[in-house]
Image (cartoon, rainbow, N blue to C red; front, side, top):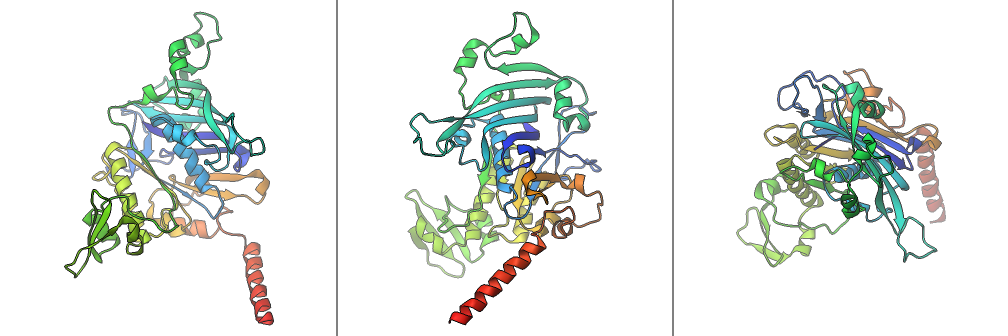
Length: 422
């Protein structure tokens, strides 16, 4: 299964409460040689649809990056496996509203589909009446529709237009109670009564359609900026030495004790895993978790989602992680890395323009957050990606000068006031 386009309605901070992301190559693919960071789809030589192996979401603070990543995680889980853990708490999905509609265009077994899923928040019957109505609510599927694209090949213009894709597709499955007359084509698409009643309210009806021999792994790594953070298992020597070459080895035994030896010494240190938080850097622990998750995902052609990839990790090590997904040697199954970042220089590690999204708040903040594809906003290919971001070329990618000036003045006034009262 490959998610190619996602439109989520019901995300309150976004413009028109809607977020749209493309995970395919919108621009021309000049090189079809392996290692270009793309995976060709559809099985038809006439098809020119490539899935992106790397997608970057960037923006300043509070620009909606984490919410966008949450939405993408929900979409992938709906298509790939039971989404119950993500649907179990509405409030845990930051800025999600009481009703969501997801329109997902995806490829599975060399065929292209459109899934529309409607979810609604249902409050726990035992919830405190004085609480926020969404605080103790869970999502459930209310209705779903699945279309199969009929024509060959699939033009990019149709892929980018959900309405056009639906128009050229056949409705093959409906989640809901049958209401049409007997013999009607729509009526035939309804799930059988027993299948409808058996289906979990927290699982999509699409799962039998996307089921493959290898279940795709989906991993999510958060910012992890708080101590203590400890390893969840043994760190393989090649991974450990990349992030910290002062330690010869580190492994966890069956009794959850940590064994490590520092370089240049012969004595092994044994301690509880929790105690290692003072010896291993946050970058070493977080980096090893990322690599371990990447291996799981790369084995199955799945998805790795990393929020704030740069946290505690050197730029060259971020480059290494990105390159794991760019190379066909380490990524033979077309796995996808999606990450958020505040740091403009990381954008220069990405060769293409169409796999970068700027998330920004416009001058009129009442209109909400916009997700703008770099390729759509910037036609000039010679500009460095980082310079476009830092220069505020498209607007909303740098803090406002007036706000920066006001903060500097506030700090100066506070310092002067403190000195005055000293």
